[in-house]
Amino acid sequence: MAGPVVLAGITALVALSVVPVSAEGRKRDRDRDGLTNRYEIKRSHTNPRRADTDRDRLRDGFEVRRSHTDPLRKDTDGDGLRDDYEVRRSKTSPRRKDTDADGVADGVELLLGTDPRRPPPAPPSPPPPSLPPLSPPPSSAPPPGGAVPDTPSPPPPSPPPPSASPAGGFPNPASTGVPAGWTPAETRSSDLTVSTPGAVVQDVRFTDGADIVVRADNVTIRRVDMQGGSITNQYGTAPQGCGHNMMVEDATFEQIPDTFEPSDSPVIGEGSYTARRIEIDGRGEGPRLSDCGPVNLEDSFIKIHGADPSTPACDVVHSDGVQGVAGRGVTAINNTIIFQTSCGTSPWYVGGAGAAYPNTGRYDIDRLLVSGGGYVFRQGVAGSVTGLRIVNNSWVYGPLGDMDCSAISPWEAKLVTIDSNYQVTGIVRDQQCTK
Image (cartoon, rainbow, N blue to C red; front, side):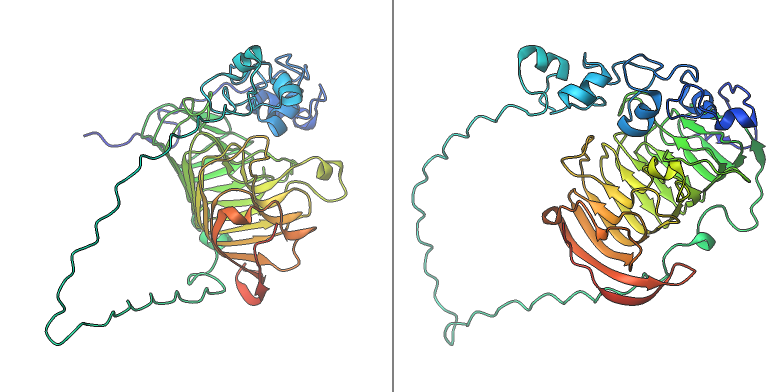
């Protein structure tokens, strides 16, 4: 059987067309829609001269950064309701054709006069049939020498006490990203589209904000340096329009050298991927959990810098280390998420039932070091949390926010101090799960 297609250098690469943009034009927002001209030309492919490209009464910047709808389509989910109607009036999900998953599209429900946000109640279950009384068990004669007294089973052994940090330490820049001494086989400044199932992209440096767009299943991306660019595996309506089972490992995500662009766009999206030993150095958003499928996040270091304090951008960006937007679950093992500034939302943010785009599935966390943000850790969905280490006094408002403690079991967390290598140096106290 033939092996995977390896895409390194320029062999067999399919690049998207790129329109040259001047340095000044990269920073300008001609139509004042909240997206720079460079972003609209290279990434969202919206019209930089029109604030509302698809004329759905939502600005392009709002659709990209807040509602996460398609700025090129008036009706992102095809349910017969325009995106602005769903956001502002019906309060249904503009990304989900059937918000309440009752088998009827939102637009049809409104025509029928039913609530598109609430499925009809299930019919009452019939009473269980009556059963005849159980017959008493036959008596058994005691063994010779009389009856043997009941012997209780020994209790299970107690779990070992949680340690301050994992045996190998929490991930840091030295243990993540492209390996020390790495040199790329190719450097490219244009976007790359991968359409071959099972392809491998490796040893490439992407400059000037160039992106990787994955339009095939089982694609592996390893040892890449993304300077201002991102990796996305969603190219249409999820879950059909997604490249599933994507692997990203030993990759670095950084700003374009000698520039800084405030941002809250994810470096990896939109679900159905594994990210292993990735390093995010000063970008505005980390990996996104969304409706392409469940995510695995392992042994990674994420340092978020969404904007600089005392700048207008600080009040605009909604940066997160990891964010769930219509997520389908995550398993996160041994990761570090650090906020460099107070601008942004939270290192870990997975909203609950009240979120605009509810997250489903389980969100299981083992060994996570987090620091900074308004609230450092926010999880309003079901899952387990063990080995959570929150850097003491690193928050603006508090260590926890928007928690659904009844849905999280087990829970084990501590407030800690760390050193410059992001390793725990002391335990301040246990942190109970509080709302």
